[in-house]
View 1 (tube, rainbow, N blue to C red):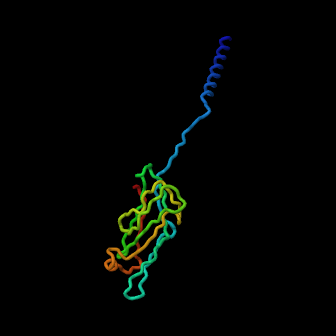
View 2: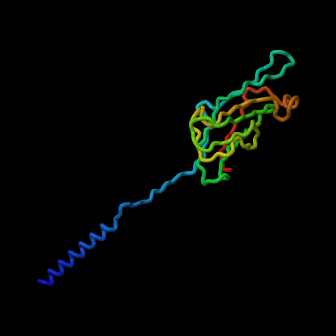
View 3: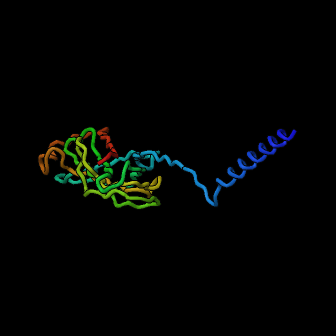
Amino acid sequence: MKNLQLSVLALMLVSLTSKMNAQSADTKTDNHTVTIDIPEVAILDIEPSANKNISLKFIAPTEAGEKLVAPAADKSLWLNYSSIKTSTGPDNVRTVSVKLNTPVPGIDIKVTAGAYSGNGAGTFGVPASTLTLTSADQTILTGIGSAYTGNGVNNGHNLQYDVAVGGTGTGATGYSSIVANTTAAAIVTYTISDN
């Protein structure tokens, strides 16, 4: 019986010691890991998305011997983008390029991106000077870091389109390439990419 009492007492001591050791492992502070997953982002669009096609119509002269009159500039479109770059550093930035699918004979289509304006945040692109569009990519914005412009009109970079006689040459040469055509449509493509 005495052995049984000693065994029960030993078992209770072991149990009590285990509980004390378990409680003594806790401290006044503790920690855990929070894993953050941030996706790479590089998207853009032209706003207003419902009405982003523009029409620039030359005006016919009313007096013999006068030339076509270029239409007023169109400033109705805005370039919006969202960008999260893959790493930090001055060389890890994005650009936006622009190109024309098919030139209009005798006519230069020019685009100017305005400075950033809107409700976004981050490192916005720096606009190039006015570009005369061709079928080759040209950089219109440089230095885009992690940023978002805000969505819709009055956010991002305002795009100003102008047209002028030019095309394959200037002056008489460009003018001689012009052909009356009510359906001359050119597609302008913008692309955001890594530097």
